[in-house]
Length: 237
Image (cartoon, rainbow, N blue to C red; front, side, top):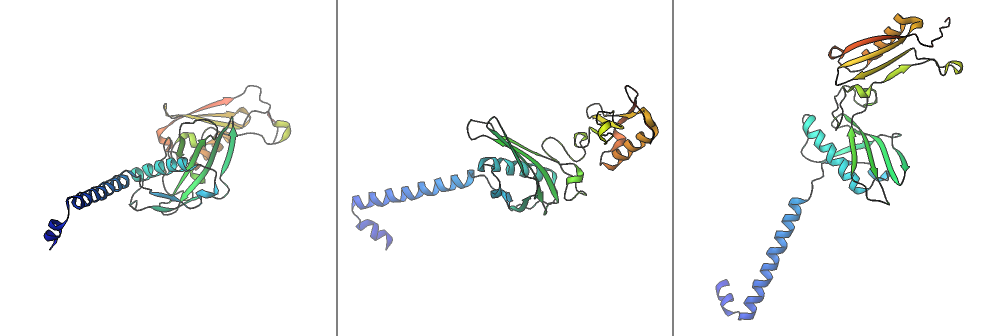
């Protein structure tokens, strides 16, 4: 029946049908290609519209998070992760020379992960993408029992916990030397502790108590102590 129908068509009708079929095929191919090259959204941020961050920067943030998650987090679902939330009270914006920078903490309950986000953009000048997805200190993670891996750091990075020091907090000693001050060098695998000469053993212990409160694997580092006795005035406590 179909064969007879085709045979009964005029030449112009056959050409018209052929053109229509070609157009349909082309539209189908274009749609398939667009679908194939369209980046898949793996991360959904519940309250992203509460920020001023442009859509293209959000795409960059989500892409970086997905890259970190799929390479470092076990049992990641293949479908979209739709419970990423900007932690209340952590979103901050600053603008300098027409460049706006936003920082915030992003919690993902389903993965038990927290990421520290930094992103910059400009409405007045071309600015290359600047998106940084890193880890916060363990004390700021919603689930401190998990390990975070960021673009430039991880839960065990020295830079998250050092330098750190404790100084006199009363007004008259505002410029006084600190009781102790701790710095570190990841490349050299060293931690340097400077303590006040006023009570060396006390401040060495306090410095070590702080270091032991962090997730740092202290066995990896050589800890060097130095006593600060320059322009230090000790007072009775």
